[in-house]
Length: 411
Image (cartoon, rainbow, N blue to C red; front, side, top):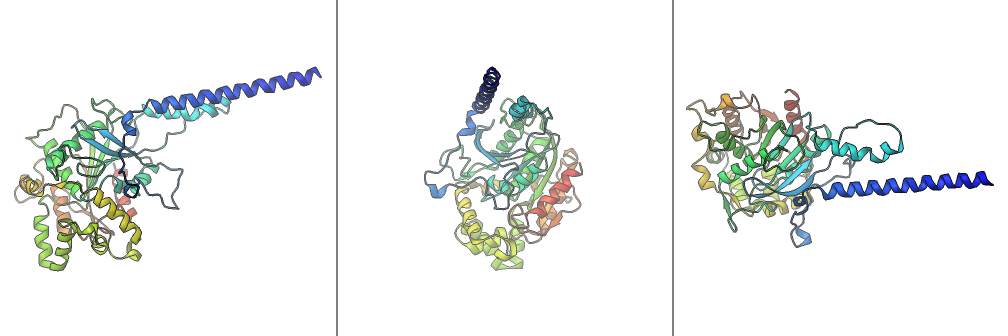
Protein backbone atom coordinates (compact mmCIF):
# COMPACT_ATOMS: atom_id res chain seq x y z
CA UNK A 1 0.00 0.00 0.00
CA UNK A 2 2.82 2.41 0.90
CA UNK A 3 4.55 1.51 -2.39
CA UNK A 4 1.44 2.51 -4.36
CA UNK A 5 1.24 5.84 -2.53
CA UNK A 6 4.92 6.53 -3.25
CA UNK A 7 4.48 5.75 -6.97
CA UNK A 8 1.45 8.04 -7.16
CA UNK A 9 3.39 10.83 -5.47
CA UNK A 10 6.26 10.46 -7.96
CA UNK A 11 3.90 10.61 -10.89
CA UNK A 12 2.23 13.66 -9.40
CA UNK A 13 5.56 15.43 -8.93
CA UNK A 14 6.59 14.60 -12.51
CA UNK A 15 3.31 16.02 -13.83
CA UNK A 16 3.85 19.22 -11.84
CA UNK A 17 7.39 19.57 -13.23
CA UNK A 18 6.17 19.13 -16.80
CA UNK A 19 3.44 21.74 -16.27
CA UNK A 20 5.97 24.19 -14.80
CA UNK A 21 8.34 23.69 -17.75
CA UNK A 22 5.50 24.21 -20.24
CA UNK A 23 4.50 27.45 -18.49
CA UNK A 24 8.09 28.70 -18.53
CA UNK A 25 8.39 27.82 -22.24
CA UNK A 26 5.20 29.72 -23.01
CA UNK A 27 6.46 32.78 -21.11
CA UNK A 28 9.80 32.70 -22.94
CA UNK A 29 8.08 32.60 -26.34
CA UNK A 30 5.82 35.47 -25.25
CA UNK A 31 8.85 37.53 -24.23
CA UNK A 32 10.45 36.75 -27.58
CA UNK A 33 7.40 38.11 -29.41
CA UNK A 34 7.24 41.23 -27.24
CA UNK A 35 10.92 41.93 -27.87
CA UNK A 36 10.34 42.34 -31.61
CA UNK A 37 10.26 45.81 -33.09
CA UNK A 38 6.85 47.37 -32.52
CA UNK A 39 6.87 48.62 -36.09
CA UNK A 40 6.23 45.07 -37.21
CA UNK A 41 2.68 45.42 -35.95
CA UNK A 42 1.89 48.73 -37.64
CA UNK A 43 0.92 47.54 -41.11
CA UNK A 44 -2.08 49.68 -42.13
CA UNK A 45 -4.99 47.94 -43.83
CA UNK A 46 -7.71 49.64 -45.86
CA UNK A 47 -10.88 50.28 -43.89
CA UNK A 48 -12.98 48.31 -46.37
CA UNK A 49 -12.61 44.56 -46.05
CA UNK A 50 -13.04 44.19 -49.81
CA UNK A 51 -9.90 46.24 -50.36
CA UNK A 52 -7.66 44.15 -48.15
CA UNK A 53 -5.17 42.08 -50.08
CA UNK A 54 -3.02 39.35 -48.71
CA UNK A 55 0.77 39.57 -48.87
CA UNK A 56 0.88 36.07 -50.24
CA UNK A 57 -1.69 33.83 -51.89
CA UNK A 58 -1.01 30.19 -51.15
CA UNK A 59 -2.19 27.60 -53.64
CA UNK A 60 -3.76 24.39 -52.46
CA UNK A 61 -0.62 22.58 -53.53
CA UNK A 62 1.69 24.85 -51.54
CA UNK A 63 3.83 23.42 -48.78
CA UNK A 64 2.51 25.14 -45.68
CA UNK A 65 5.49 23.87 -43.69
CA UNK A 66 7.89 25.96 -45.79
CA UNK A 67 8.93 29.59 -45.28
CA UNK A 68 6.10 32.13 -45.57
CA UNK A 69 6.46 35.84 -46.37
CA UNK A 70 5.94 38.34 -43.54
CA UNK A 71 4.79 41.91 -44.21
CA UNK A 72 5.88 44.82 -42.03
CA UNK A 73 5.87 48.58 -42.30
CA UNK A 74 9.31 49.82 -41.32
CA UNK A 75 11.03 53.23 -41.28
CA UNK A 76 13.88 53.66 -43.77
CA UNK A 77 16.85 55.89 -43.07
CA UNK A 78 15.63 58.17 -45.87
CA UNK A 79 12.53 59.08 -43.83
CA UNK A 80 10.09 56.91 -45.79
CA UNK A 81 7.92 54.44 -43.91
CA UNK A 82 7.96 51.49 -46.30
CA UNK A 83 6.12 48.24 -46.72
CA UNK A 84 8.75 45.50 -46.37
CA UNK A 85 8.20 41.82 -47.06
CA UNK A 86 10.71 39.23 -45.88
CA UNK A 87 10.79 35.48 -46.31
CA UNK A 88 13.63 33.83 -44.45
CA UNK A 89 14.83 30.22 -44.43
CA UNK A 90 13.96 28.29 -41.28
CA UNK A 91 16.62 27.95 -38.57
CA UNK A 92 19.05 25.13 -39.16
CA UNK A 93 18.79 22.13 -36.81
CA UNK A 94 21.16 22.56 -33.87
CA UNK A 95 21.22 18.94 -32.79
CA UNK A 96 20.69 18.02 -29.16
CA UNK A 97 19.66 15.07 -27.07
CA UNK A 98 16.41 13.34 -26.53
CA UNK A 99 15.86 14.76 -23.06
CA UNK A 100 12.75 16.68 -22.09
CA UNK A 101 14.64 20.00 -21.93
CA UNK A 102 15.84 19.70 -25.57
CA UNK A 103 12.39 18.72 -26.74
CA UNK A 104 10.75 21.72 -25.09
CA UNK A 105 13.42 24.37 -25.55
CA UNK A 106 15.16 23.27 -28.79
CA UNK A 107 13.13 25.43 -31.19
CA UNK A 108 13.42 28.48 -28.92
CA UNK A 109 17.21 28.11 -28.65
CA UNK A 110 17.54 27.61 -32.44
CA UNK A 111 15.42 30.67 -33.12
CA UNK A 112 17.55 32.90 -30.91
CA UNK A 113 20.79 31.52 -32.33
CA UNK A 114 19.59 32.42 -35.83
CA UNK A 115 18.87 35.99 -34.70
CA UNK A 116 22.58 36.72 -34.56
CA UNK A 117 23.77 34.38 -37.31
CA UNK A 118 24.68 35.53 -40.79
CA UNK A 119 23.21 33.36 -43.55
CA UNK A 120 25.71 31.47 -45.65
CA UNK A 121 23.85 32.28 -48.88
CA UNK A 122 23.34 35.74 -50.38
CA UNK A 123 20.28 37.77 -49.51
CA UNK A 124 18.02 38.22 -52.54
CA UNK A 125 16.73 41.81 -52.48
CA UNK A 126 13.87 42.35 -54.95
CA UNK A 127 12.55 45.61 -56.39
CA UNK A 128 9.24 45.82 -58.26
CA UNK A 129 8.17 47.91 -61.26
CA UNK A 130 5.21 50.13 -62.14
CA UNK A 131 1.68 49.08 -61.08
CA UNK A 132 3.24 46.54 -58.71
CA UNK A 133 4.57 46.45 -55.16
CA UNK A 134 6.60 44.00 -53.08
CA UNK A 135 3.67 41.55 -53.09
CA UNK A 136 4.57 40.47 -56.65
CA UNK A 137 7.63 38.64 -55.33
CA UNK A 138 5.90 37.02 -52.37
CA UNK A 139 3.56 34.66 -54.22
CA UNK A 140 6.11 32.47 -55.98
CA UNK A 141 9.70 33.66 -55.81
CA UNK A 142 10.16 34.32 -52.11
CA UNK A 143 8.86 30.98 -50.79
CA UNK A 144 10.76 29.15 -53.54
CA UNK A 145 14.14 30.75 -52.89
CA UNK A 146 13.74 30.74 -49.10
CA UNK A 147 13.04 27.01 -49.24
CA UNK A 148 16.44 26.66 -50.94
CA UNK A 149 18.17 28.58 -48.17
CA UNK A 150 18.20 32.09 -49.67
CA UNK A 151 16.90 34.91 -47.43
CA UNK A 152 14.48 37.06 -49.47
CA UNK A 153 13.51 40.69 -48.90
CA UNK A 154 11.60 43.30 -50.87
CA UNK A 155 10.19 46.75 -50.23
CA UNK A 156 7.44 48.77 -51.89
CA UNK A 157 8.33 52.08 -53.50
CA UNK A 158 6.68 55.35 -52.55
CA UNK A 159 3.24 55.83 -54.09
CA UNK A 160 2.12 52.23 -53.58
CA UNK A 161 -0.62 51.30 -51.14
CA UNK A 162 1.78 50.10 -48.44
CA UNK A 163 4.34 52.91 -48.75
CA UNK A 164 2.76 56.39 -48.65
CA UNK A 165 4.50 59.26 -50.41
CA UNK A 166 6.59 61.42 -48.10
CA UNK A 167 5.12 64.57 -49.63
CA UNK A 168 1.48 64.27 -48.62
CA UNK A 169 -0.96 64.36 -51.54
CA UNK A 170 1.75 64.04 -54.21
CA UNK A 171 0.75 62.16 -57.36
CA UNK A 172 4.25 61.98 -58.85
CA UNK A 173 7.48 60.72 -57.32
CA UNK A 174 10.90 61.77 -58.61
CA UNK A 175 13.50 59.13 -59.36
CA UNK A 176 15.81 60.62 -56.71
CA UNK A 177 13.32 59.69 -54.01
CA UNK A 178 13.19 56.09 -55.18
CA UNK A 179 17.00 55.93 -55.32
CA UNK A 180 17.33 57.36 -51.81
CA UNK A 181 14.81 54.84 -50.47
CA UNK A 182 16.58 51.95 -52.24
CA UNK A 183 19.91 53.00 -50.77
CA UNK A 184 18.44 53.23 -47.27
CA UNK A 185 16.73 49.86 -47.69
CA UNK A 186 19.98 48.15 -48.74
CA UNK A 187 21.90 49.74 -45.89
CA UNK A 188 19.16 48.76 -43.47
CA UNK A 189 19.64 45.08 -44.27
CA UNK A 190 22.76 45.21 -42.11
CA UNK A 191 22.12 44.62 -38.42
CA UNK A 192 24.89 47.09 -37.54
CA UNK A 193 23.54 50.02 -39.56
CA UNK A 194 22.26 52.99 -37.55
CA UNK A 195 18.90 52.60 -39.30
CA UNK A 196 18.79 48.81 -39.44
CA UNK A 197 15.51 47.20 -40.42
CA UNK A 198 16.10 44.56 -37.78
CA UNK A 199 15.70 41.60 -40.12
CA UNK A 200 18.59 39.70 -38.46
CA UNK A 201 20.53 39.11 -41.67
CA UNK A 202 23.95 39.73 -40.13
CA UNK A 203 26.23 42.75 -39.91
CA UNK A 204 27.52 42.48 -43.47
CA UNK A 205 25.03 40.49 -45.55
CA UNK A 206 26.01 39.55 -49.08
CA UNK A 207 23.33 41.05 -51.35
CA UNK A 208 22.05 40.08 -54.79
CA UNK A 209 19.92 42.98 -56.05
CA UNK A 210 17.15 42.00 -58.47
CA UNK A 211 14.83 44.45 -60.24
CA UNK A 212 11.87 44.06 -62.59
CA UNK A 213 10.69 46.52 -65.25
CA UNK A 214 10.89 50.09 -63.85
CA UNK A 215 12.54 48.61 -60.78
CA UNK A 216 15.46 47.75 -63.06
CA UNK A 217 15.77 51.36 -64.20
CA UNK A 218 15.68 52.51 -60.58
CA UNK A 219 18.54 50.13 -59.84
CA UNK A 220 20.53 51.57 -62.77
CA UNK A 221 20.10 55.06 -61.33
CA UNK A 222 21.19 53.82 -57.92
CA UNK A 223 24.27 52.16 -59.46
CA UNK A 224 25.06 55.42 -61.21
CA UNK A 225 24.98 57.33 -57.95
CA UNK A 226 26.66 54.67 -55.82
CA UNK A 227 29.50 53.76 -58.21
CA UNK A 228 29.74 56.88 -60.37
CA UNK A 229 32.55 59.37 -59.94
CA UNK A 230 30.13 62.16 -59.06
CA UNK A 231 28.06 60.07 -56.68
CA UNK A 232 26.01 61.89 -54.06
CA UNK A 233 25.31 58.88 -51.84
CA UNK A 234 26.98 58.53 -48.47
CA UNK A 235 29.39 55.65 -48.98
CA UNK A 236 30.78 55.63 -45.46
CA UNK A 237 28.59 52.62 -44.76
CA UNK A 238 29.45 50.23 -47.58
CA UNK A 239 26.81 47.91 -48.99
CA UNK A 240 28.05 44.39 -49.68
CA UNK A 241 26.58 44.16 -53.16
CA UNK A 242 27.74 40.98 -54.87
CA UNK A 243 25.54 40.99 -57.96
CA UNK A 244 22.82 42.78 -59.93
CA UNK A 245 20.07 41.15 -62.00
CA UNK A 246 17.61 43.04 -64.21
CA UNK A 247 14.44 41.24 -65.35
CA UNK A 248 12.44 42.62 -68.28
CA UNK A 249 13.92 45.96 -67.31
CA UNK A 250 13.10 49.29 -68.87
CA UNK A 251 16.39 50.04 -70.69
CA UNK A 252 18.79 52.91 -69.88
CA UNK A 253 17.24 55.06 -72.62
CA UNK A 254 13.80 54.75 -71.03
CA UNK A 255 10.49 54.08 -72.76
CA UNK A 256 10.85 56.72 -75.48
CA UNK A 257 12.92 54.85 -78.10
CA UNK A 258 11.01 51.62 -77.36
CA UNK A 259 7.69 53.41 -77.94
CA UNK A 260 8.90 54.56 -81.37
CA UNK A 261 9.94 51.01 -82.23
CA UNK A 262 6.51 49.71 -81.18
CA UNK A 263 4.83 52.37 -83.31
CA UNK A 264 6.77 51.23 -86.38
CA UNK A 265 5.90 47.58 -85.72
CA UNK A 266 2.27 47.86 -84.67
CA UNK A 267 0.17 50.93 -83.99
CA UNK A 268 -2.39 48.68 -82.28
CA UNK A 269 0.11 47.19 -79.82
CA UNK A 270 1.65 50.59 -79.17
CA UNK A 271 -1.81 51.92 -78.30
CA UNK A 272 -2.40 49.02 -75.91
CA UNK A 273 0.78 49.86 -74.00
CA UNK A 274 0.00 53.58 -73.88
CA UNK A 275 -3.61 53.02 -72.83
CA UNK A 276 -2.62 50.39 -70.30
CA UNK A 277 -0.02 52.46 -68.48
CA UNK A 278 -0.75 56.14 -69.15
CA UNK A 279 -4.54 55.85 -69.04
CA UNK A 280 -4.37 52.99 -66.51
CA UNK A 281 -6.53 50.82 -68.73
CA UNK A 282 -4.73 47.75 -67.34
CA UNK A 283 -6.57 48.31 -64.06
CA UNK A 284 -10.05 48.08 -65.58
CA UNK A 285 -9.68 46.11 -68.82
CA UNK A 286 -8.93 42.40 -68.34
CA UNK A 287 -7.80 41.90 -71.92
CA UNK A 288 -5.37 44.81 -71.73
CA UNK A 289 -4.07 43.57 -68.39
CA UNK A 290 -3.45 40.11 -69.79
CA UNK A 291 -1.69 41.45 -72.88
CA UNK A 292 0.65 43.71 -70.95
CA UNK A 293 1.60 41.54 -68.00
CA UNK A 294 0.49 37.93 -68.33
CA UNK A 295 0.21 37.14 -72.03
CA UNK A 296 -2.36 35.10 -73.92
CA UNK A 297 -5.31 33.41 -72.23
CA UNK A 298 -5.91 31.46 -69.05
CA UNK A 299 -4.87 28.26 -70.83
CA UNK A 300 -1.64 29.87 -72.00
CA UNK A 301 -0.27 31.07 -68.68
CA UNK A 302 -2.43 29.69 -65.88
CA UNK A 303 -3.70 33.12 -64.82
CA UNK A 304 -7.46 32.79 -64.27
CA UNK A 305 -9.98 35.63 -64.63
CA UNK A 306 -10.19 35.67 -60.84
CA UNK A 307 -6.41 36.11 -60.68
CA UNK A 308 -6.57 38.98 -63.16
CA UNK A 309 -9.26 40.71 -61.10
CA UNK A 310 -7.18 40.25 -57.95
CA UNK A 311 -4.06 41.65 -59.59
CA UNK A 312 -6.03 44.56 -61.01
CA UNK A 313 -7.18 45.43 -57.48
CA UNK A 314 -3.52 45.44 -56.42
CA UNK A 315 -2.59 47.63 -59.40
CA UNK A 316 -5.24 50.16 -58.39
CA UNK A 317 -3.97 50.16 -54.83
CA UNK A 318 -0.36 50.54 -55.93
CA UNK A 319 -0.73 53.49 -58.32
CA UNK A 320 -1.60 56.16 -55.76
CA UNK A 321 1.42 58.05 -57.09
CA UNK A 322 3.58 57.12 -60.08
CA UNK A 323 7.07 57.94 -61.34
CA UNK A 324 7.54 61.48 -62.64
CA UNK A 325 8.34 60.65 -66.28
CA UNK A 326 9.04 64.25 -67.25
CA UNK A 327 11.70 64.52 -64.56
CA UNK A 328 13.10 61.08 -65.38
CA UNK A 329 13.51 61.93 -69.08
CA UNK A 330 16.15 64.50 -68.12
CA UNK A 331 18.10 62.02 -65.99
CA UNK A 332 18.03 58.71 -67.84
CA UNK A 333 21.01 56.39 -67.25
CA UNK A 334 21.81 56.40 -70.99
CA UNK A 335 22.75 60.08 -70.77
CA UNK A 336 25.81 59.04 -68.80
CA UNK A 337 26.59 55.98 -70.99
CA UNK A 338 29.98 56.01 -72.63
CA UNK A 339 29.65 57.29 -76.20
CA UNK A 340 28.70 54.70 -78.77
CA UNK A 341 29.55 51.78 -76.50
CA UNK A 342 26.37 52.09 -74.45
CA UNK A 343 28.20 50.85 -71.37
CA UNK A 344 27.85 52.50 -68.00
CA UNK A 345 30.88 54.77 -67.48
CA UNK A 346 31.49 52.98 -64.17
CA UNK A 347 31.05 49.44 -65.53
CA UNK A 348 34.55 48.46 -64.40
CA UNK A 349 33.58 49.28 -60.79
CA UNK A 350 30.39 47.21 -60.80
CA UNK A 351 30.17 43.81 -59.11
CA UNK A 352 31.51 41.19 -61.50
CA UNK A 353 28.32 39.15 -61.20
CA UNK A 354 25.60 40.74 -63.32
CA UNK A 355 22.62 39.28 -65.16
CA UNK A 356 19.94 40.55 -67.54
CA UNK A 357 16.88 38.38 -68.15
CA UNK A 358 14.60 38.95 -71.14
CA UNK A 359 11.19 37.31 -71.64
CA UNK A 360 10.42 36.00 -75.09
CA UNK A 361 6.70 36.83 -74.77
CA UNK A 362 7.27 40.26 -73.24
CA UNK A 363 4.66 42.74 -74.53
CA UNK A 364 6.19 45.75 -72.76
CA UNK A 365 9.98 45.53 -73.15
CA UNK A 366 11.33 44.42 -76.52
CA UNK A 367 14.46 42.40 -77.24
CA UNK A 368 16.40 45.48 -78.30
CA UNK A 369 15.61 47.11 -74.97
CA UNK A 370 16.88 44.09 -73.04
CA UNK A 371 20.05 43.99 -75.14
CA UNK A 372 20.59 47.66 -74.35
CA UNK A 373 20.39 46.89 -70.62
CA UNK A 374 22.86 44.02 -71.02
CA UNK A 375 25.32 46.29 -72.83
CA UNK A 376 24.96 48.89 -70.09
CA UNK A 377 26.16 46.30 -67.54
CA UNK A 378 28.94 45.17 -69.91
CA UNK A 379 27.29 41.85 -70.72
CA UNK A 380 27.36 40.22 -74.13
CA UNK A 381 23.69 39.27 -74.15
CA UNK A 382 20.61 38.80 -71.98
CA UNK A 383 19.44 35.38 -70.85
CA UNK A 384 16.14 34.62 -72.62
CA UNK A 385 13.34 32.72 -70.88
CA UNK A 386 9.89 31.65 -72.01
CA UNK A 387 7.61 34.02 -70.14
CA UNK A 388 5.44 37.13 -70.48
CA UNK A 389 6.44 40.45 -68.88
CA UNK A 390 5.50 39.42 -65.32
CA UNK A 391 8.10 36.69 -65.10
CA UNK A 392 7.47 36.19 -61.38
CA UNK A 393 3.78 35.24 -61.77
CA UNK A 394 1.78 32.71 -63.82
CA UNK A 395 2.66 29.12 -64.61
CA UNK A 396 5.99 30.04 -66.25
CA UNK A 397 7.35 31.76 -63.13
CA UNK A 398 9.95 29.06 -62.56
CA UNK A 399 11.72 29.80 -65.85
CA UNK A 400 12.92 33.16 -64.61
CA UNK A 401 13.48 31.85 -61.08
CA UNK A 402 15.72 29.07 -62.32
CA UNK A 403 17.76 31.55 -64.37
CA UNK A 404 18.36 33.51 -61.15
CA UNK A 405 19.14 30.32 -59.24
CA UNK A 406 21.72 29.23 -61.81
CA UNK A 407 23.22 32.73 -61.61
CA UNK A 408 23.63 32.82 -57.81
CA UNK A 409 24.82 29.23 -57.69
CA UNK A 410 27.68 30.15 -60.04
CA UNK A 411 29.16 32.60 -57.53
